[in-house]
Amino acid sequence: MDAWIWQVPVLVVAGAAAGFLNVLAGGGSLLTLPLLIFLGLPAAVANGTNRVAIFFQNIFAIAGFRRQGVFPARLALLCTLPALAGSYLGASLAVDIDEELFRRLLALIMIGVLLFTLLDPARRWRVEVERFSRLRLTILLASFFLIGVYGGFVQAGVGFLVISGLLAHGLDLVRINAVKVIVIFGFTVVALGVFVAHGQVDYGLGTALAAGNSAGGWIASHVAVKKGHRWIRGVVSLTVLVFALKLFFG
Image (tube, rainbow, N blue to C red; front, side, top):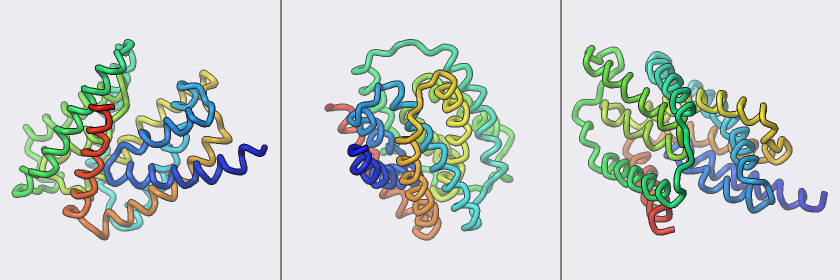
């Protein structure tokens, strides 16, 4: 009981920071997962417990974007369905990956996202989803199937891939973040069900973390709409750079 006196406020504050980062950029779980393990949870239970926070964070973020009038439902559905199919395949093919190799691969992916975000090559051809040609729509579906495979296989860093994938199709970062929270929500429902079925969730700590994540996600959804594409690009760039360097150099 004494531990809860300090664990709960720490989790709420850390969760708020992670939720804010997750919705605007990504990488929030790189803060919360080590914290849960530090609090004494086994790695698998920490992973499952973290999904509780992400689940509620994305519910609040989706509600926040919708309240702000940013709810690209058709685009989100187009991205989510192939991603879920890919996720199932990725999970089925999952094998143990050397941790050091994984960290370096993830760092390289994040640096790629950083370069794409800074250069913003698609800024001259921002499009509405209704204007996608058949070819670009096919590429969109295929890319999110592959993102789903990656997400099902290793999960970590998938938010950065969603951002990169949609930037490549000429979308602004406000709509990208709205789509991202819906897609990741779909992943989380499936993943959380698996962890619950295997008894790998600490509901007490998960609830405390979820309170923080939800608040951070709600605030970030409003900030994203008000600040716009250019400001979000700066947040994404800084976040990706910090986490990529940490992953690459340990």
